Image 1 (cartoon, rainbow, N blue to C red):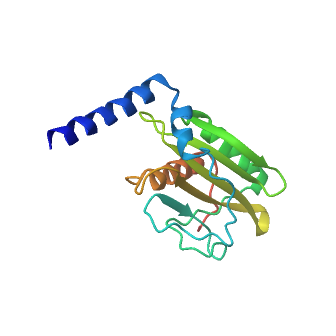
Image 2: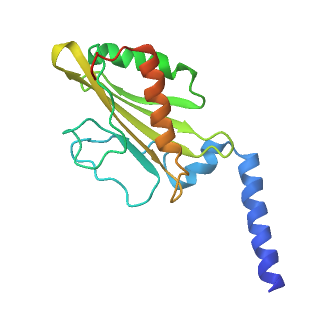
Length: 171
């Protein structure tokens, strides 16, 4: 029993030492690329594990949405620009891909302490009368649960966007 404890402690110490010596990007690279890649919102199948969150307008996503994004009083290109400004203060956030044709951006954001990578995909969608909305899917690369981090991120991003962009009356 004592030998098992000693081996377990040694393994944990080696992992912690490796993490402290290496850059978190290199350490977590053992689990694959931090960017989990693109998302097709129309055919998206949510994970069975509770480590993702989705904000999707009605009728777009096949999967159930956690949050309903609002309708904004500007077109999708302007909404995208507003979101880019809103995200300027987000810590440890990197834009990893941007598609101007589909108005889709993909980000990786790392947690503060351990550097866990999450991939966030944002698609901006034009609506009638010069309005727009968006779909956001945030998911963790590592771990079974996320302690609500992905949903909180989407809520924070939407709140920041709403503080900068007007929502049409009655919506």
